[in-house]
Length: 314
Image (cartoon, rainbow, N blue to C red; front, side, top):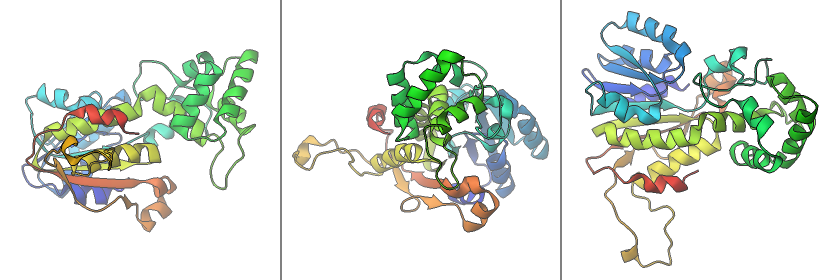
């Protein structure tokens, strides 16, 4: 998503090492490798992406490598192969089109499949959550991570339905939600509930925060970070991170004496003000791009910031 914009933001050069932290089907990796004689390290926790990694490796022999793992652990993953500094990091946050299109993965409410939603093949599934959490916790999850105004009604409907039978299929859950959420034009009523469950199953916001902090540690001075997000919760985390690291003292009070506000040298400089949206051409070809936002910044020579301020983001 926004592939050409990401490549332009990272501006890879010959000999550069770039991390594609969310490899997926390899779109960013292939575009970066085509743009310059650079090396790309892909990272993905989804074991099904190996076929795409093999394709990229074959097209660009000796210049691409896939590491299995989470992008939040990128600093440790790269250190394990002898790399302690990189020239660029690309992140495409959230579920991939490839995952959405595989009904058996359980991400999509448009196709029936097991209610799974795991990006990796281990851990708690979405079905585990909807069948085990109490009504209040379900409502909190759906409201906080899906921003669903009817969260209490959805949670109530889920609890009532699971008394009759466990909720194990995506279509089953989508139909339950549709009974209490009015459909908006062009938006499935289950969209926000599915988003919330997916975020919790995969700890997506926590992973994003860890990934941003790890990128700050890995990037060399003048190295570039490009992050594409797809909903307000993700974008809020990225904006908070870059605002802070670029020197904007978010969260400080104007009533406090300036001497009480910690001042650190900015570790990033924005490459453009605000977030860029996908082009009209891309959104026309791919409606999923309509909510995509790109934020990008360049690393300074300043020391890495402590990551404790990221706990308040989101």
